[in-house]
Amino acid sequence: MERRQFLAGAGALALTVGKAGAQQPPAQPAGTLTNDQVKAEKAKAMQWHSERPLTGSVPAHEHDFDVTPNDRMFVRNNLLTPALDMNTHRLAIKGLVDKELSWSVFDLAKQFPTVQLQGMLECAGSGRSAFRPQASGTPWLETGGMGCPKWGGVRLRDLLRAAGLKPGAAHVAGHGGDPGPIATAAPVIRSIPISKAMEENTLVAWAMNGEPLPFVHGHPLRLVVPGWVGSASTKWLHTIMVLDAPFKGTYMTNSYVLPRHPVEPGQKMPPDTVSTEAWPVKSIITSPAPSARFKAGTRVPVRGRAWVGEGRVERVEISSDEGKTWQQARLAPQGDKYAWRTFTHDVEIKTPGYATVLARAWDDRGNAQPAVSTWNPLGYFWTGWHRVGVVIEA
Image 1 (cartoon, rainbow, N blue to C red):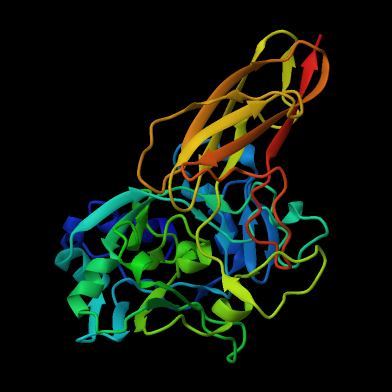
Image 2 (image 1 turned 90 degrees about the vertical axis):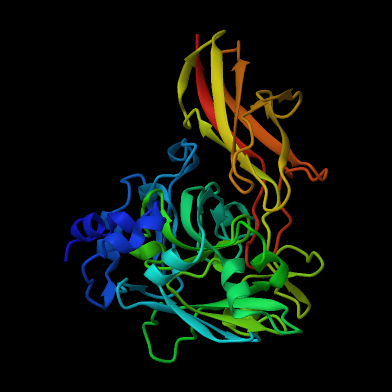
């Protein structure tokens, strides 16, 4: 069945999910989607970085939206893209709970309060191509691998409370249903601390921007752990496991880790590591586009987005003279807790030629966006100043 037909039937479940049971979507055949099928639903501006696993993102000037459209949301698969049937899919909760439970997507919509919120998701390797020397992993664009859509679903904490937490519950793991290209591929499982699982903005989501989740973004269910690295937001979610310690597995112990203490650039990962969690403060310039042209002496309107994994963005500054001087940008009012914030500022560049505009941000805990991020072997958490070059004509 064509995806558009599927979406038309599933519309009642999208965001006004309290009415979800009124019309169930037709069945979607099981199987996997090809990379070409996934790409067909994305914007032409999407740049594809690898085929297996499939990864892609748009550059900063294609992110000039307060809410990231579905066709510009980054793609990061660990394995293949399954096409799961919403009608038969079930979510189980197991482990350190008083009672193990299981729900259909429609059960969730009927039994628990439904919510809509906007929240950042960003791959841990977002911006990896900017590290010097080169770090291992997918060569994400310096400003690629993130997005801030609106999500619809239920709070994870409501499901945990329904099951009841036993003493010792410390971590909550999401088990994804994405199949591997070979039978022995490690399943995608990632856990988060119980405190984050119980945070009111952590969701089990089935909607994205008012539509059922696209298949490549986790249809029919996924975790949404806004502000944290994207790997924490398990896609194609079928099992929630409550554990007494962090999960030990490929996506917790081998991938998505940082050295506990900084290492010399170019060195291998040391034995002492920590798991990647909340994103540090970061900003990107979304307008003007690179090499945009302006007349000398006219005002150049600068616009961008700033965010932080925990806390809030305190201020953003703009420089048009390579960091010699900085001016404070205007910040839009804070929306949802984990949504990015739009900033704007007009700069005047009087001298003809090529000029650059820089942006840097601070959070409310005094953390500053660095000029260059601390190097690490897997190239995670690139938050260096974003610069955009423009042409000033006489």
